[in-house]
Length: 256
Ligand code: PGA
Image 1 (cartoon, helix red, strand yellow):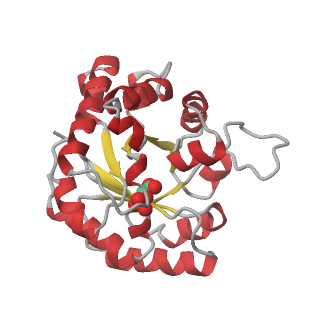
Image 2 (cartoon, helix red, strand yellow):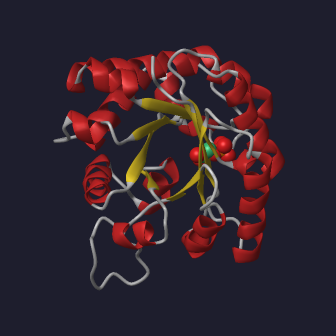
Image 3 (tube, protein in one colour):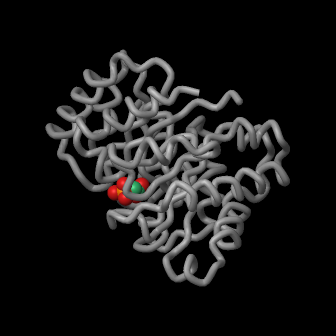
């Protein structure tokens, strides 16, 4: 298996520019010994360029948290893929459940955004995940497969090779409730199975599937030890350099 473990931090709507630079600098210092684990930080748009410059001479990659599906135009307040790329960022989170819930993003829109992002050389982190009601209704596998199918519609294996998928059960995001490693592994294996069926075994074997939802230093090891969990998308615990770097060091210690 050749998959690298990748830990990404989604800063959400936190950190002014001064705070962002401080955090980025601290993460850089605390992770300078990391050799095998991929690190991505996703600050707010306002801090993207400055943060990208700070980590430019490190192994840390930078990503946006969303983007507009349009390439350019009269869309007041929107940020395009080209603009994100021009900051030095190389990733973009797409279809996060908060974007779906508060900004009405659908699988169809996520699909279009993925295509635009790829066109501009960005590597999307595509988020999918079920609600508590759907989990309790025993339709998690169905829901997640449908979201993935919609998000990846019309893509070829070479496109999927440039993606990361993040499984984030909505009921575990920001709630302190984490899926058990077994629950998460089960869904990750469903996701890899679907990718195998649609895009072939090589693409599925190489696809990094992150888990997200209240990942913290205390639960990182048990989650990241699962065979199909290839990293984490971290919210709350990435806002402090100590906890974020602890998760990264855990991943590094489990090096595959
Ligand atoms: P959390 O957020 O770690 O605070 O649960 C994860 C995410 O939304 O990506």
